Length: 230
Ligand SMILES: C[S@@+](CC[C@H](N)C(=O)[O-])C[C@H]1O[C@@H](n2cnc3c(N)ncnc32)[C@H](O)[C@@H]1O
Picture 1 (cartoon, helix red, strand yellow):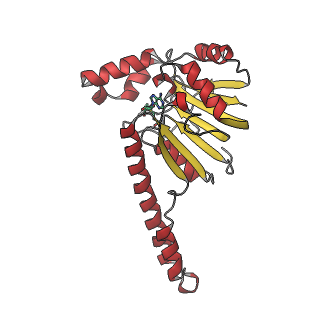
Picture 2: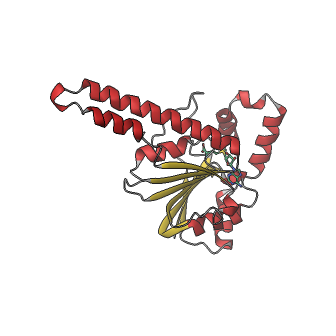
Picture 3: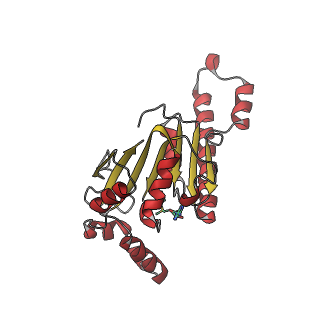
């Protein structure tokens, strides 16, 4: 993604970790994470505060190591305390993808939706809403699991721990059934009049990075990436 990106909206942001990454990797000064679950918004706000504090400490540590003649003055420390990193750039909002216009979100340069489309009961309505939120020339990035994925990889990726409780199993099985194949996604997009899009496989930019369970998180045969341009 280019550095100077304008505004970013992550729909179905969950814990907000991707939103944080988007903020740290770009210079966008308006980043919104939206999620239906109040618990997720609370979690995301907690993660934002924690990361902001970490960066503040990293900056202070860096300043400490500077030679005396270029150490920042006391008021620089005050400014840092008064304007903690990230807090003025990221806002987490509770709400549904179907009500994006009700929460006053429009003219967004990049809308990102990762591993959430299969959680939306009406994907076509959700896609329409997210597209409408874009500014002219804006882009909508969708990344999700494919229902026709390599299931061995998906099962490994989910990890045994998640199969231990009935509620989680029910939740996952339901979610899996709602995933789209790339052909279904293509048809859904066409059915709502969207034609300027590209669907590719989900190979991560650094395919060698593994998650804590030692599984490649973004295996090519389990996910798709879809970029829709306005
Ligand atoms: C699997 S999580 C993905 C979290 C995040 N995008 C990530 O990749 O780490 C899916 C999220 O979608 C949210 N969600 C489900 N239905 C939604 C809706 N109608 N509108 C907004 N968010 C929704 C859930 O609350 C959940 O946090």
